[in-house]
Every structure is written in C-alpha cells, then in structure tokens.
Image (cartoon, rainbow, N blue to C red; front, side, top):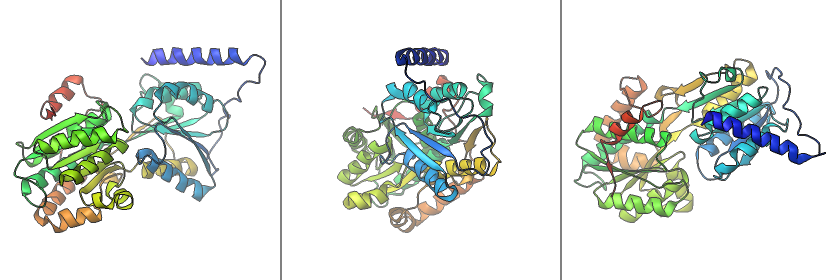
Length: 381
C-alpha cells in the first residue's frame, strides 16, 4: 500500500507539472533552517472540520496558544472528511513554500504524512493519533515525529467506571450488568478503545456484558442514537460513544431512554449545557485525549531547540494527556451520588497512573489478537 501511494504521488506530481504548461512552477519548500527561537509558519491539515468537536479542535487550541505566545502563525486546511483529496492537497500545500511545520493526524493520514515527509524533507511534520514507520523510512527521522495517546488505558478507565456504576444499582442503573459501546468505524483506534473498555469492565467483574456496534462514519448522529437505543433496550445502562461528533447521538439516546452516556474527544456535557441543557445531566463524563496539550508542548520544543525528531511519542495516563473528565455532572452523579463507586474508581485510576494494570492494545497487534479480545464482547443485533 505504501509503495502504491508513493507511485500515485509521483504520478500526480508529473501530471500537475505537465498540466501547468508555461505557468510558473509552485514555489519550492523552504530551505532547512534552525527554527530555534523563531516564529513558526504552521499548517494544520484538518481531516474533518474545525468546530466539529473532535480532537482537531483541541489541537487547534494548542497551536493557537503557541502562536499567541511566540508570534508564530497558523493556517488551516479542512478536508471535510473527503479522503480522496488528501494526496493532492497535502502535496500542493507542502509545495507552496509557505510552511515550516505541518500538523495533522489520525490513522487515515499516516501513510500520506510518510510520503509527504519524504518528498519535503525541509518541512517538519507533527502527526497525532497515529504512528510513523521509521523502520521502513529511516529518512523520516530527520523531520517527522508522531504523538499518540494510549486510548486503550483511557478506555480502560471508562470501562471500569461503567462497570462499577452498572453493578451499583444506584441512580439510573438497572439490575442488568450490561454496558454499551458505539464506535465510529472498525479501525485501529476504535478497536483500541473497545479493547480497553472491555478489559476495564471485566477488571471490575468478568460477568459484565459489553455490547458494541459501529456507525460507519463520524457524523451520523441519528444512526449513533439508534444504535445506542438498541443497546439500552438490550439492558445497557451506560453507553460509551466513540464516534467523534456522532457521539452526541449517543448522548441524545441517553436522554431519551433516561440512562447514562460517556462522550469522547471533548466535554460533551459542557457542550450540551449550551445547546441542549435538558440532555447534559445524562452524559456523566467524556474520555478526552488532550492532543492540544501534547502538540503545544511539542511546538515549544521546536521553539526552544530541544525537539527530537524520528520518535513515535506515546503518552499514558501519568502524562496528564488522558482524562475521564470529572465534570459537574460527574460530581453530582458519581462523586456525590455514588461515593463508594467513586472511591473504587479512584483506586483503579491510581493503579493506572502507576502503570500497575496491564492493558491490551490493538496498536501493532495481530488481527488474531484483536479478534480474540473483541470476542469477549457481543456485537449488538
């Protein structure tokens, strides 16, 4: 696949130059310079769209804070989920000569970042929520690094919290020991979330059933709501929505069914307080990978001259980049409404912080391993 992408990118460049005729060629990438202490020209290459309440909004906030502090500038390009444009747009933007640093992310961009990093060695690339194949492309060790938050351990905390809640019989929970999960798609990152969630629930009680389903995209809130309602009807009293903006459909389902939901990426309860306050109290917490903090800190290392390229940075619970948000709703529902649950949950989080609980992962795993872990849960009918 990677060789095919390289060939396609090469063909694209040939066709682009041939089609220009006598037109001026695109400006070359900037010559490599020492970026220490200098304002950076940053491109955020957005896979979805800003304002969709995904990780990319957090990343933009981190970049903007860095720019405000250093006089750097940021421009954004939004793909609006059109993956067919990735190669052409990334090549065109990198070839413009306008940027020192390109920041982008998610597993669907990984191979495109690798190819762009090879083609534009004088541009620095920061890729989040994915890893780079430095073994195959050792040349990238000079200008590319990745930033990966271990969503499996974050999801473990969510599964443990849900497991403790469903067994408590308190609040809106029922007598059934069932949790739900609605993912965006059957991809590595979502499988990683699901494996952690299953293991967290089973850490509390191996008898807890976990039902799961996939929306198939990241925008269809109506389908996410429908899938969540199916899981509530099957006995779940907490459903974890891991489908980016579509997760708000899970929150809507929790309100409709008078059950609980967990959100993802941003503070769903806080957002609902603004848009649908009647729904907010049913979204207990949100699992957030704080890529905004990670990218901000990474940019600071470029600025202060301590950056190390060629690294797949992997952040666990102890970094502070992973959070099950303890919102006002969390405090009311769990901390105050289920104090014994909260105490047990805190003990589990403390062990995660110390690295005392091994958590399985889909990242770098064989398909046999992933299939075996997912077999411990039940695809929703």
